[in-house]
Image (cartoon, rainbow, N blue to C red; front, top):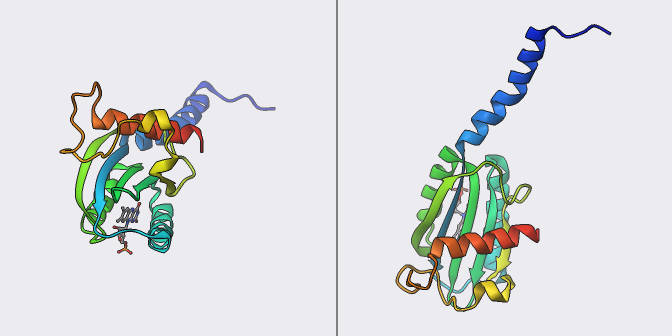
Length: 166
Ligand SMILES: Cc1cc2nc3c(=O)[nH]c(=O)nc-3n(C[C@H](O)[C@H](O)[C@H](O)COP(=O)(O)O)c2cc1C
């Protein structure tokens, strides 16, 4: 069998490494909360998710949507290319099914927590009890930051826990 030259080995290595480097450079996660403008029943949620999943699949977006039927709050984590998330957030922000959209955090990530999930769904009641204890809302006015940790870290911990159970 022919041995690869040093130059060929280097080329092969760079070809494998470069696309990952550039892709990961732009991979972002974003978490926001919002309030549904009316009660979302099972059919409303199914319709929302069906559309979101088919769009997200073609956009390379993954994530999870949480809905609290007591408070009508949504919390959504989106993962994807930075520019795609900008475009998607513009659309989501002008959706009349919810209001008071508040981005809690956004940052670069190396890997996705919800790889393979074009949009997972969980009810607020599905969050492990110790993690939702004491949380009545993620709204900026309703959740003072003086309880030891910020809304963003609470949300991050909840999503990390959910991703381990997927
Ligand atoms: C709480 C909430 C979460 C949503 N999440 C997504 C999503 O993850 N992906 C998506 O494409 N649309 C999502 N949507 C729907 C968008 O707001 C919008 O309706 C959709 O992107 C329109 O797509 P189209 O005009 O390209 O058909 C969401 C809407 C709401 C109210």
